[in-house]
Amino acid sequence: MAIALTGIGELVTNEPEHDGTALGIVEHAAVVVDNGRIAWVGRAVDAPAADTERDLGGRAVLPGFVDSHTHLVFAGDRGSEFAARMAGAPYDGGGIASTVAATRGASEDQLRALLGRRIAELRAQGTTSVEIKSGYGLRRDDEARLLRLAAEVTGETTYLGAHVVPPEVDRGDYLALVTGEMLDACAPHARWIDVFCEPASPHAFDGDEARAVLEAGRAHGLLLRVHGNQLSAGPGVRLAVELGAASVDHCTYLTDADVAALSAGDTVATLLPGAEFSTRAPYPDARRLLDAGVTVALATDCNPGTSYTSSMPFVIALAVREMRMTAAEAVWAATAGGARALQRTDVGRITPGARADLAVLEAPSHTHLAYRPGVPLASTLAVGE
Ligand code: NIG
Ligand code: FE
Image 1: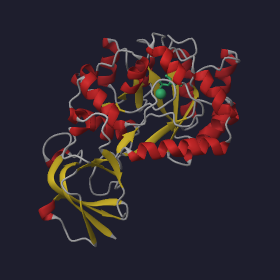
Image 2 (image 1 turned 90 degrees about the horizontal axis):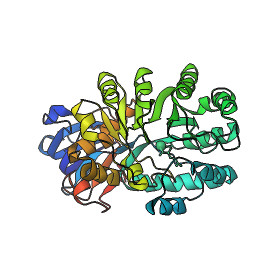
Image 3 (image 1 turned 180 degrees about the vertical axis):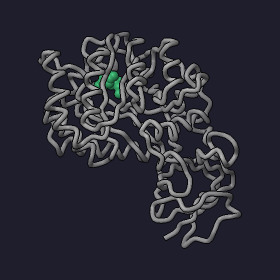
């Protein structure tokens, strides 16, 4: 059944053909949805007849947010670690062990319920696609369990056995496990492999270790993404570009060579300003990347340690206020940018054939996502309700 969404004050399509800008804005627009897909996009006055019509009363509509970086399957709470950081303590990844202990101790049903609540939270704020990593199991069966649970809610599952070396385990033995038996158990449930490449953390992995992890994942058919340059200008960004990773995430500390590599390659730079907010770190230099022609995505990094937010609108507001992105650049990065980071062409845009994954704003324009920070303007548009 075809449904016409009319009365759209501002439609963000991410298709430049409409207005010559990256956001591809159509004013006074309509969208026809048929069977879960976009069937028609244009000015309301030109809209074809449909079976039913829904008038959106001048609200703005945009592609649902594509949150391309989360760690949503975990148990436990690290509010006290956050409080300590706000009082001056640094972040080095050491707190991950406490989430690992709580997650291992939780039942499958408990983890499923926690994950379900977080998915509902994120959908309520306009997110329609989400990537979810493992990384709080760090034993073969625990990692596989987290990925099985993640696969119940998304196709974008990422094996992050190489999150940190668990405290009780020898580093060499752990690397052998992550690239061997654990990978064998996890690969059937994952599309991606990721590694926390960060020589500045005693818990994470250096460039050689990260390369070994990524190459092993690739040999098992997994696609690559990297946590890189979060705490220092380490080798993560250049390794990601060299190996053709879809995305390198964080990019907080970059050298000129890192920026040059990103602008010459196809790897998306995914910025996660919720992490800088919650660790009181300097924000990444988004302008330097954009000015060099790098494709930038924005994501929440939702996790209990460095960024316990599920809100893409909050991330957009941070990117605009703190990273000097324009509202248009930030909205693009949170939709089309996320889709690029996940190598998806069926989401992050509103065009015939794409999935009808839409967000609607209680506002007339996408600018309000940054202009009215903290106000719950965005929600997922459930077509057919
Ligand atoms: O993306 N940096 C590594 N991993 C997460 C944090 C995980 C945690 O502290 O629990 C991140 O920031
Ligand atoms: Fe992360």
